[in-house]
Length: 265
Image 1 (spheres, rainbow, N blue to C red):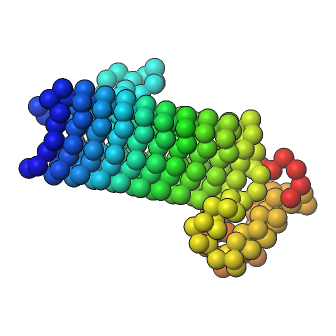
Image 2 (cartoon, helix red, strand yellow):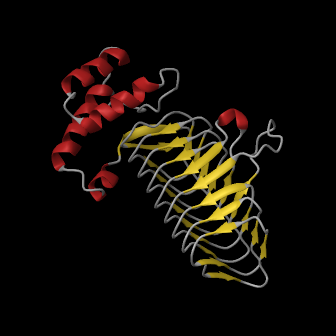
Image 3 (cartoon, rainbow, N blue to C red):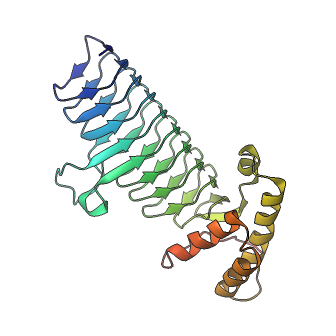
């Protein structure tokens, strides 16, 4: 097995490595760590706990992965952090293991970018192609869908759900669930519209974007009750998978508060 471990690195005997793994100067790798093929750990990185990192990842200076959760009920149980493939993890990023009461696993998908000082809290489930910008923070138990962008200094409160392809603006304080394709900002964050720039960049068709905009206007209009508008939107746009993703997202957890527009759409 081909490996490159710097002589100043401290690697526990139980750590497991794939092919062509690189461990840089002054890193500390714990006994229950597994690192996949071609992953590069640069310098002064600490990887502890029951942590698994996939293939072709890069972990930059002073990141700390697999540390204990910031949870008063945690008593050292062997919970996990599982990170997928091709992730870019930048300086001073922190990702914590899960808690027994929260499912015991913090899970990060593939192809993500986690910029300097961003944080993934215990028991989070983060999808694929997610970007956390500088100092973006996910509290415990946050569920983030694929292709989400969380801008700099934004924070997502514990237990929030953030739907696929949504965009969270800089400095936002998100305390309520964010619909798929939504665009939110503010303190506390409110729904500002749809993430149109992100949808265009992800090659959504003009027809799909037009349907989403029409459904958004119907769903968040002032007329009728929200339940009536939800039913009307479902009946009108039942043929549209992206619109129904929003409807299903809202209906899935009825007791969760939802980010809403501040003004009439």
